Length: 111
Image (cartoon, rainbow, N blue to C red; front, side):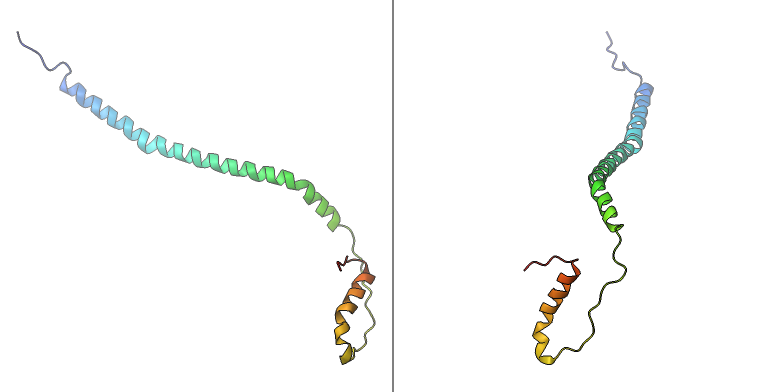
């Protein structure tokens, strides 16, 4: 009785190895880079969603600032009369500026 070792022909084994290499190379060189790029795109989309949420939260503040900026400012500011300050009164300059700021009413001073 003779034992037959060649159950699968050699040609079939070669075709099987070639097809396995082709499938593995397609997966490695084509599908894997697409998979990586999809992960990068998902991260970008998550970043954009976060920016959109932030913009939606800041929109009311932005509209309020726009409304305040459109308020008209006075066209002419009143300037004090020009006069020279004697050298012994130089220490009074900060108090003079505080007084001018109080008169204008546009600055709240913290004392």
